[in-house]
Every structure is written in structure tokens, then in C-alpha cells.
Length: 118
Image 1: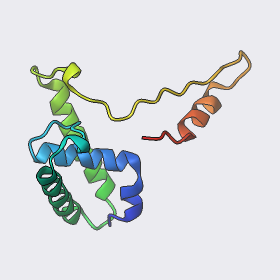
Image 2: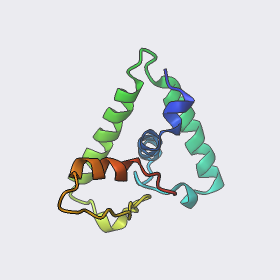
Image 3: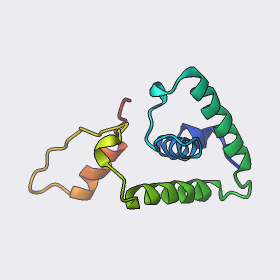
Image 4: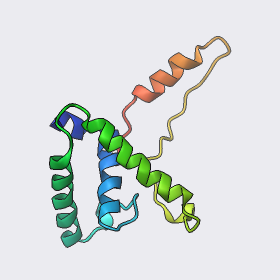
């Protein structure tokens, strides 16, 4: 069953945003701040309906991922797709210094574990 912990996960929340934007006919990567108040209300209503429709058997995250992947696949395979018209919400500009003796996997895990402020 979908929970607040699921919603607090940034990746899940981003997937939900893409799914709802698509359902409402907006660009999948449409920013919340660019929506009017009326559109934001409609978004929240659609989000509630979508969450209520998710499976309760524990497969809700798989359903969200499948829906997200379907939308993104359609978007990137569309011949009219223009990457320059899409806005990326989060860009990780963090970097790591590597020394010859460093373990790359450990350094990447360290980088991934850092929280990025949005």
C-alpha cells in the first residue's frame, strides 16, 4: 500500500509528477511552479485519484515505475520530441576527486548518498 514514506522518496515523487503531468496533457517534465493555481488543484486531484487506484498488494512501486517508463519511452521515441524544450528539475553538479588508489565504486556510493538541495 502506498505510504507517506513512498511519497517522501524523491525518485518516486518525480515519477508520480511525470505520470500525472502526462495524464493531464502537460509536458512530462512540467514544473509545478509553472502551473496556475487551478492547474495545481487539478494536478493534486489527479494525483490523489492515481494513488488511490494503485495496487494494495505491495506492487504499487512497480506499477508507478512501469507507468513512468511507458511515458518516458513514448516521449523519447516520439519523432516530434525536442530535448531542448524539456526542463530538467534537478542537476547533480557535485564532483568527486579521485586518486589513483581510490575505489571508484566507493566514491560513487559516497556521491550518491549526498543529499542535493532542490
